[in-house]
Image (tube, rainbow, N blue to C red; front, side, top):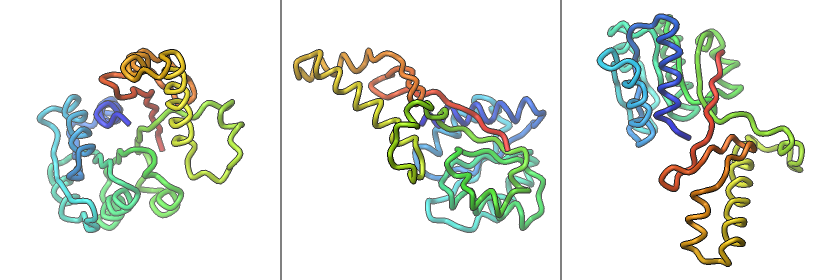
Amino acid sequence: MDYKKGCAAVANKFKEQGIQKIGVLKVNLEFGELCLQGVKEIYAQNTFVEGYNLGDTDFRTQILKLNTAKGGAIINVGFEGDTYNTLKAIHDFKYKILYGTVDDTVTNKIKNQFGNELKGAWSFGFKSVDKSFSSQLSNKKLSTEYGAAIAYTHIKQIAKALRSCSSDLVCAARSMDNSPPDNTIGFIDFKNHIADLETSLKNY
């Protein structure tokens, strides 16, 4: 997942809606920093940041400060519990703030409990799994099809590279880097040996 690109896309949606300032509730992990970089590409000095550590559950102080800064939206790309605690603080304070996150944090539990706080929210994530691939999955109880689609895409690429290079690993690595686009999960290409996947946006 490209958190920098995804957060920039979400921030741009808020800017298009007329939000002049934005808050970032940043988890103190690498993907939190990447998200912040993406937001700053869109909002620059109009970005206000409050940090937290993974496992923190009380975000009232951070949300209060971000609201005081007059940010019309808050982006937080932690996990489901982080989205839950962010929206709970927004709910408890009765703030009218738009929310942005990564889409796998917006579970049914979140939708059911904080439907009002999610109105107008934006999230980013992988594109939908190709329907022809989805129809072949025998286990329909998967919590997400994304992982299966990513694994399938890369296993195909590895097998093709090893076969074409007679198991020469240097050649196989070069072959992997030149893998063509694949629609199973929106694979575009490899950049510095890291897969670049299409990003989709959702509005709630």
